[in-house]
Length: 207
Image (cartoon, rainbow, N blue to C red):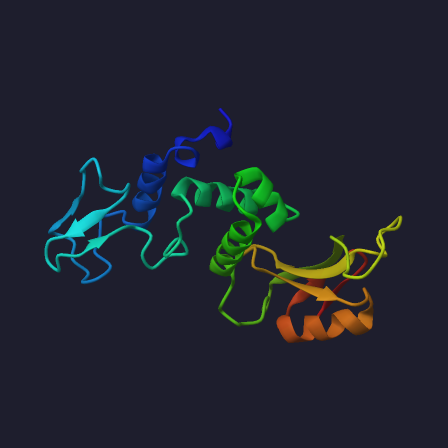
């Protein structure tokens, strides 16, 4: 069966259960007071899917609170579809593509993609690599640079340099004006520890 056929990607109730099982592995937790004992799922016919109530602080809540899904009217299963598409697209996926595939407005697709990528962002701020570590440095060409005409080859495309740490999979990408040593060297110096082994298409060296 295709991964895209998974119930949580199409059924709203299953989508909430999928997220709840991952965020609350030991059971529901009230985001307002932290209560875990006196909480219950509301089952009324007029109750929205995924609503719980804490009988300690008397407040309702859902698993969306405190996550990228909070304050969003987008159905949970649509969020999970978007996460699957963004995480599974090797070369990335644009807001326009999400808009067409998910059947949401372009504004909503842009909002979702930014929230998902923000959640995926590495906030450590520490350089990549270290003693005995290897970081691969490579460039690619994607999309189209603003104001350029589409031509043969890659001259009209945006130039992106990526740094990927072997083993951990940590990665950082930067748009550059030119794929040249003068453009790439400052990026390498700022993001990779000096004792790291650096791998490129042509050379293996140390930072």
